[in-house]
Image 1 (cartoon, rainbow, N blue to C red):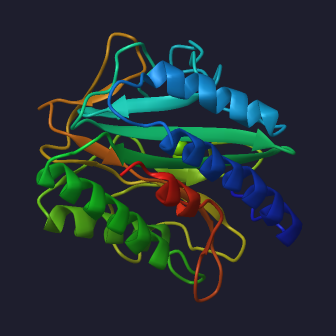
Image 2 (image 1 turned 90 degrees about the vertical axis):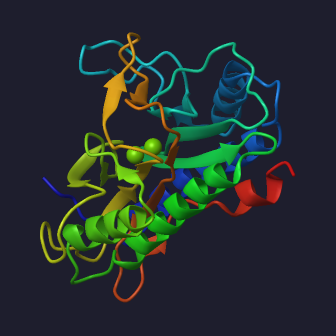
Length: 262
Ligand code: MG
Ligand code: MG
């Protein structure tokens, strides 16, 4: 069932999503070689709760019914998504995707940013740039009268034109009272196919892109997802509202990018 949101609901969704951006911006201040993803998780959980919200990821069940043990997903290098924070220090040249979810006043925020740790290779920089570009190319299609397949195609076409892999098993989704609502928003597809986009449809668009092949494995912890060929993966996500002419981006990277450690 697809629920279109009212303008009041969209403002509440915006608050929850802007809090995700602020949380990631707090993390951006301390991301550098030597910091552990567990330190990032502790900071994120504290910041989210201090702002009167809940970290939606904490306790969220996997398909085996096991609860996610942390407040953010931290996916390093060949990890695509759902990495569990740990005590391994990040190294110079790593990339780390940090996916964060909040629930504030009954509505969910969901956004992800892939950070460079120290100096990263030119190849890694290109992967991050193209994945973020693909997100915005998808968002350009998220307007009244287009279809989900228009978003999917735009993301896929941009990434594949650079020779990258587009992960199939995980997709974007509707966002509202629940973190994952209908419809699904794949990062691959055909123009003119799928659900018609209507005014007030709120969705997360989230390309998960690999430098090599698109195939993935699940780690034995039943959470972390890695590329089969161990190539690097990037993940950028915004929650947006479909509008006439131009989508309204409810999450924000602005503060994150101000705080990124040079
Ligand atoms: Mg997310
Ligand atoms: Mg999401």
